Image (tube, rainbow, N blue to C red; front, top):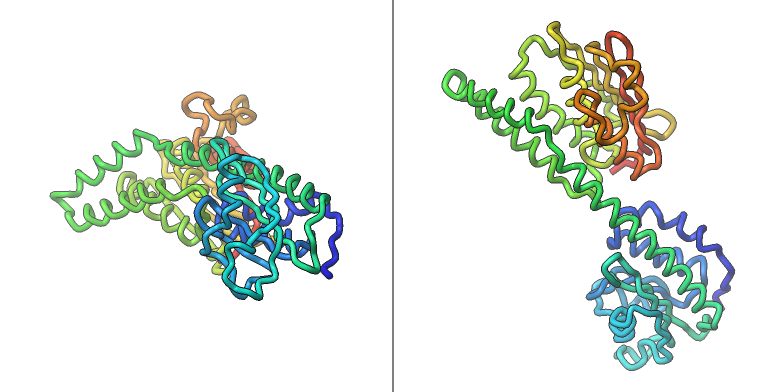
Length: 351
């Protein structure tokens, strides 16, 4: 008989939170199913969306699994948007006479506009579903739904922030490309490709992570356009060690920092810009340093606030807000009379 122990809901959430940040994905479903099966002692656990089983762990996994249609009680529970106890579980639907699964408890997983799926706990001979087991599942289901709703809001916020694009940059890029069409057509073609890559990076899906290598490629596309515009007045060094390139992070974190440094640091003299990436104690640290116009002392405290006026770094506020939403910690900023240093850190999650 499988032992069932009391596990605080927060302990389960801690184990599943990293995956649930990205919504009800197959990876998140596997994490939830495994944790519930291992820590709460159900005979088997399934996690579904509204049409398919996303993950299945436990007894019966030899003939039940991801890709199956959910059992009928799942459709009933999500239609009613309420937990449901099904005494027969899979008995009337499974064609395998040796199937060990009995009763099932179904708890809907909700987004803001209604159910998105369900968690299903199955009883077996060695692990029946008692009243406490059902109550625990309902409690966990409520917490999981709350986290999914937070993820939904985060995704919507990230999409809106990623969509921001400086209109002056677009006009300047197009004018720069136009200036090369007759005199240097091959360079104009390369700049068109760089501009297309830059636009494509803006359309990255917010729930996905990209590698630092991909992010730096988009940075280089942006810099190719700016260097075509400024020529020798802009000198950039990108210094990333090989062990940093495979680390995953949300898209469009580094490029806006570079854009901000050029936009607000450029003066009549050449601007030197350094983008540096290193691993430090299990974390990726990216630093963007320029020797341009520093941030005024009276603005340094407000520079990371969204909506602050022109010239105070809206790009910084964008990145800071997304970093804080994703990791709970934003950018670090220092400014001097001749230059600014911006640093971000994320956990070093490899590909």
